Amino acid sequence: MAEFMTWTAHQLTAALATRQVSAAEVMQATLDQIAAENPSVNAIVSLRDGDALLAEARAADQQGPHGPLHGIPIAVKDLANVAGLPTSQGSPLFAGSVAAQSDMMVQRMQDAGAIVIGKTNTPEFGLGSHTFNPVAGATQNALMPGTSAGGSSGGAAVALARHMVCLADGSDMMGSLRNPAGWNGVYGMRPTWGRVPSEPLGDMFMHQLSTGGPMARCPRDVALLLDVQSGPDPRQPLGLPNDAFAGRIRADVKGRRIAWLADWGGAYPMEDGVQQAAEAAVGRFAQMGCTVEAVKPPFAADAIWEAWITLRSFAVAASLGPIYDQPELRDQLKPEAIWEVAQGRALTGQQIQRASALRSDWYRAAGALFETYDAFVLPTAQCWPFPIDWHWPKHIGGVAMDTYHRWMEIVVPVSLIGLPCLAVPIDGPRPMGLQIAGPRGADLSVLQLGQAWEEARA
Image 1 (spheres, rainbow, N blue to C red):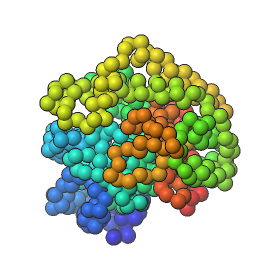
Image 2: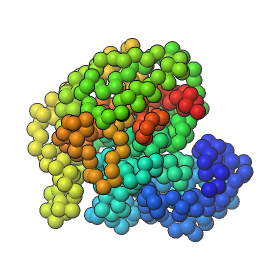
Image 3: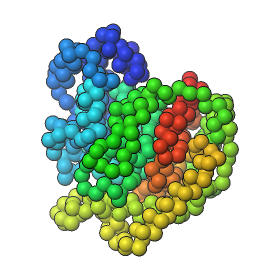
Image 4: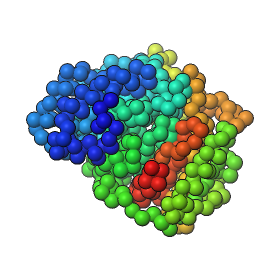
């Protein structure tokens, strides 16, 4: 493996800008690394023709530095459209369906100089935190062979961990940027909802659960990609400005106050060893000069879950409803998707209103928590990476999981109210991470804590 394949994105972009290395050299090394690593992990799908990619890289060299991601190879999560590439979404219904144009977030990365080499694997329609589907198969954990990579940005996390790319995009509804980051030893950022706009299509007010975001092997690179992805779109409401985080990520975090929420007062079942490993890792914040305090749950877990499962099923029913309504297509959906659409279709207006009221109550409670603390911290998952041939864990800590995603309930407090949250890797017996969550709009503060974490970890 070429040495520069281990560099950070910041190091590599600087070397490309000064012509210390060429985009063609980086592309060839990327293709070599994919050939060496991808067959065993299945992280990258729909890889473009190597000769075409090399020609594009040589053209970038002739053009000269263009944008903050000039010459950087990147693979896009297979839920987003890239002009000229298939967007299967992990579903046989869309296998081979070629996109006519790139989605906004993808186009921003391309306009910044990135070269899209292909796609990263994802579960069918991104549903579930385990990356497997009938189109491309399963993605294997980068650190624990034979186990799940997490999801739904599992392919992106593994591609990063195996040095096939230095930056990756993803999306996060229910931990999809955080769970795979924790399980593969990289960093994943769920930005404040609205910072990275979605596509200006359909309803743009009601479904505030999923967001795009960045992944990388260090927080500074996460910030670099977030700077490219973020910024308001005049066609969409509720957007946030691009605040240019990468240059401000290093900060003295001494005195910042961290609330350790552990298993939410026993509400979230944990596999043996997970909470202990996370709690030991939390001690690093004290080494960084932060004040860490174990706190009681600031809001009832069952109320958060009720709001979440209602609003999530409502959103899934809206997005997959047109497929569900056609019996010949519905039969090709995985059972979990069919179940979730049916759940959403059965909801009453009163149930949806109640869920929205509960979400509002949790937002207010979180606001009260942040009056005292700068961030709260939780593990990125409730269990260790599980065998790759499982669909999902049916029990954790002796407790039966009543839905296909209940085992990831620990990510819901962040997702439900759109908080910024960075997943950071921890050192333990098996791969795991911590979620560092801050108040709405405090993406920079969260990134600064992550950068200090990375420096203390080194």
